[in-house]
Image 1 (tube, rainbow, N blue to C red):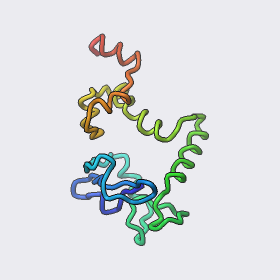
Image 2 (tube, helix red, strand yellow):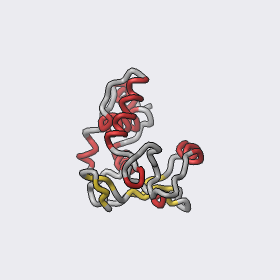
Image 3 (cartoon, rainbow, N blue to C red):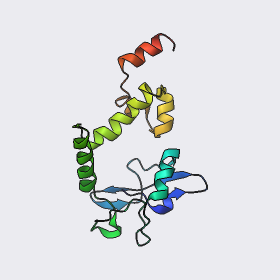
Image 4 (cartoon, rainbow, N blue to C red):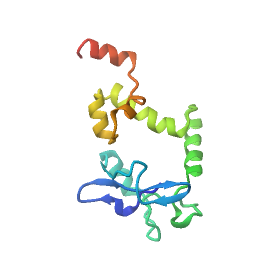
Length: 148
């Protein structure tokens, strides 16, 4: 929600994550006070080409119906969109859990990343904070056991 257009660094093909919203206020630092450089996924580049650009807003993602300054998305709007999408596919999961708790196990169980690789990818500062998201399925344990 706090990502600005200028945070996409075209020459590096990456996003500079350096700000967030806290108590509905834009804060010029992340929760951990660390800045992150996250590569742009090739599949997202296709989406970026079709995204409308609102030159009157500094934000990368602009809510066309937004009433907030800069027309950025509000957390309530994002949660509403999330719940509508979940309902459409028959899921019942909270947005935070769905975003944080599902991507990490996917990287481990479907892409077979190690905890070290996952920590590098997600930029988690402490490995301990990553462990709670890194749920390993029985099939992945079997794959590891059998050395596949």
